[in-house]
Image (cartoon, rainbow, N blue to C red; front, side, top):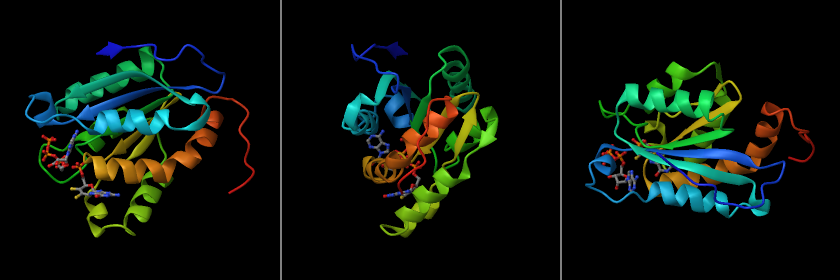
Length: 179
Ligand SMILES: Nc1ncnc2c1ncn2[C@@H]1O[C@H](COP(=O)(O)OP(=O)(O)OP(=O)(O)O)[C@@H](O)[C@H]1O
Ligand SMILES: Nc1nc2c(c(=O)[nH]1)N[C@H]1C(S)=C(S)[C@@H](COP(=O)(O)O)O[C@H]1N2
């Protein structure tokens, strides 16, 4: 796992974030990972440097390894946000939602509901993602599908609402106004 402090200026409103890429092919070096760098780019494009990606980790679809990593990032690293990509489908090796639910303390169903609902406007295949969003302590964990196309679409749907949710979770002043 590589940790890098990427930004010098960290405002009070910065969300310390990890990206977890869950892919057997990626972990074996059989396919170049494009989804991790895409998530980082989409977060970097958000105004005011809101997200500080401190960790990007590529793992195989192994439930125990995913659970252990999630626990470490939540309980030891105390990150604000973990975005996973991959392993949400129907393949027998797709276990990201199971690993996420195993470490979950509270469910945040609206995030996954909204990602799928908005995705149905693009493709009915969105019903094949079993991704969940949960809380463990003060960390929000969100599962995204594996393909770069799905990552871009789904992340862009939820980004506008994330700061407000994270501010409430972290006990910062959340402003409920607007849409
Ligand atoms: N991290 C990734 N980087 C680039 N493309 C990806 C990535 N994950 C998935 N994809 C693309 O999305 C398609 C569907 O993703 P899926 O998770 O089913 O991948 P897979 O290759 O079947 O399994 P795995 O990635 O676990 O080995 C893949 O065939 C690939 O084209
Ligand atoms: N917005 C959006 N959601 C999407 C897709 C997509 O192209 N766009 N692809 C779907 C497909 S084809 C699959 S199989 C599932 C699960 O993907 P995963 O197994 O890579 O996690 O995500 C779905 N969700």
